[in-house]
Image (cartoon, rainbow, N blue to C red; front, side):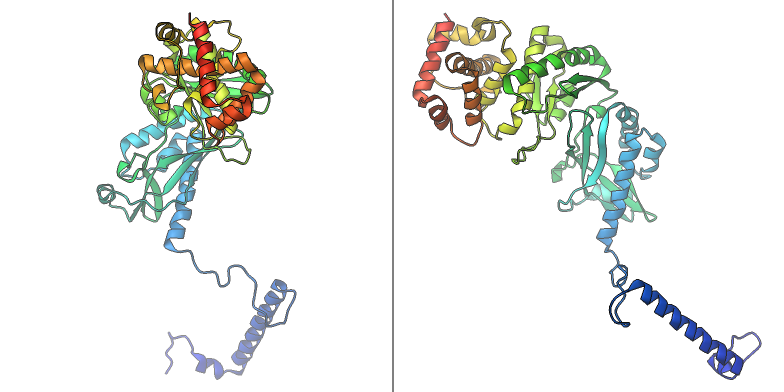
Length: 453
């Protein structure tokens, strides 16, 4: 039974010849349309072939896949907002329960980062296993989901960085109302999660770019060290030229120098807590081993360098550190410190005009009183501080000064590469100098004693 407010059913359509004809026509049109669509989509094969539309048969993304895609967009937006100084954009990405200190730190970064000549500045998700979010953090957010993904800051500075480097970020994000937002980047030591901080995380920056060889070197510091930043930048061209004269042209002939204003910044930029009397440190990513240019190479001056270094020591320290940069691709991880530090010190002091007593005063006094050295410095000697550390550095320098004096700088270079490879010191002495270790050490000791009188 059909009432006036009801839609006719199939029976009603079947009762009308005119309507039945319309149904047939519509069915024919639909069939023709399907045939045309199939024909345009598939130009070969039988008429009943399955459509090759990529969306057909594709399963919907899993929750984890969708979450990863959404958070990838979030961190890319974060990087773009910071890189362009978009403070409002930074605030818009924050979760309502985000740590206020984190929010303000990101706002400050957005005011600083545009002043650094970045060629690349972005965040990317890593592939490491998921890290649990500490329950107090997750429960306090009261969000639909909370996640601590593996995240890296990928950045490169225009000029000295031919390729970007990656540094870890201990990020926590939350999802509410179908949208992911930033919560915090505080360290999670219980899960060995750490956020690396760059100079731009420690306040306003002072940046100097300077031509070196055919490329550009960059010095980054802070306004309270601006004069020292300028001094280092002024010294870079001659330091780069001197290292190239000694080492050769098979290095980039540029440098990225950071000048720290605090012990905390120095420790962050170097990844360790160097002894207080260390003026500068060179850091680098692991060498790929394929001959490519090492990434992440930075010379980092400590907070006391500006007040402690003289023009002479600024010159020698910068040349020393740039020698590490030049030699990094030929230096295996785990190379003995007397090898890497002694070689760099020789390069740093080369052609300085200073004599043995000026460059090795502690060693000279000890040898004058007690006789020549009989052993090569040990790694632990270099970080011990005080006279022991001084003797280690001075002894290491004197080893290479002795080799250069007796065998020439070309042999010195070959010896360094042999010592800095995976081989042993004994085999390096034998293959390059034709001496066993005992004869080498004795000859070096006699050379030192003759100059320490």
